[in-house]
Length: 347
Ligand code: SAH
Ligand code: SF4
Image (cartoon, rainbow, N blue to C red):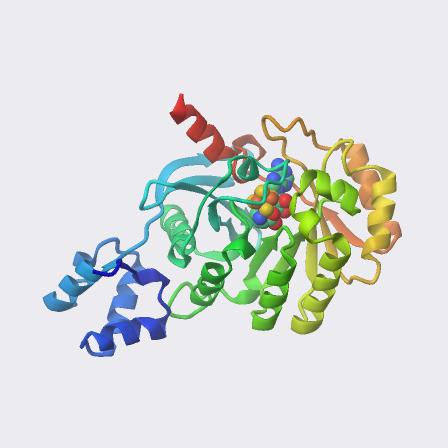
């Protein structure tokens, strides 16, 4: 028999087709959806379904889960970090942040990552597998259920490179923004990428109206290549052009992420060079003091350096903010919890 169908990764139309092709009435799709939306974890809980349909679903499908393995709550700002266990025993992390305008979740898109950025805990742990659309969704649902709140913003900035898992991520984006699912509008979703240029063009073609964030972290290729191996495949000029083209195609401004690493990319000269490179780009720069990850040797820039960097960008009319770091006491930078947890388990 063919492998089981991941029912929560189906769009509403696909679910309807799947059921009608197997001789069930189209209205059953809506009933199944309603149960899935309620967060049932077994088909047996779908009380108003006839037993033949329940049996069919049980033998042919499965429901993805993200079970809370570990939960940390920050003493300072109520940021919550989850380590979720997936169906096959793999782990991923999510972080829920509370802002004035509501709750925001940072979700993972892969178990691990192939990109190998030297400052990143996920990058240092290697790659295991892609997440399915339903596994990305399950992180939001589990957090909502646990906290008993509605999450209104999603950032794809957890473990993994979203554009390296393109089809599942796009499927997730379509499902999560649909009324049948969590109904989180595209404008409330941000996808962050390390800069896989051909995939940025592919994404632009879909015109999804999501926010795109690009991890730049350097003012030139020489520095970028030292921390981000992907820079060797896609030089900065090509990447910045892709961002301009993305803006032109979608009308959505691109944000650049720039982790300030002491002595690596945070000098005044770096700030001036970055300003020159970003002139006319119509962008916003998010400066983040790097989270130090064990074994990397990187330290965050001190406050004075951060301020000097942001001032130089401002003098050059580049919109930039130093992002406050949430959950600093719980290693809220993704990849760190899993690393600590799994390393301890190994011992
Ligand atoms: N793979 C994607 C999204 C996940 S990483 C990407 O790289 O954009 C999410 C963000 O966290 C990226 O901007 C990444 O560069 C940043 N990041 C990773 N490790 C970090 C660290 N130790 N300190 C600060 N930011 C970090
Ligand atoms: Fe992967 Fe992003 Fe980490 Fe780089 S920063 S290793 S792309 S998760």
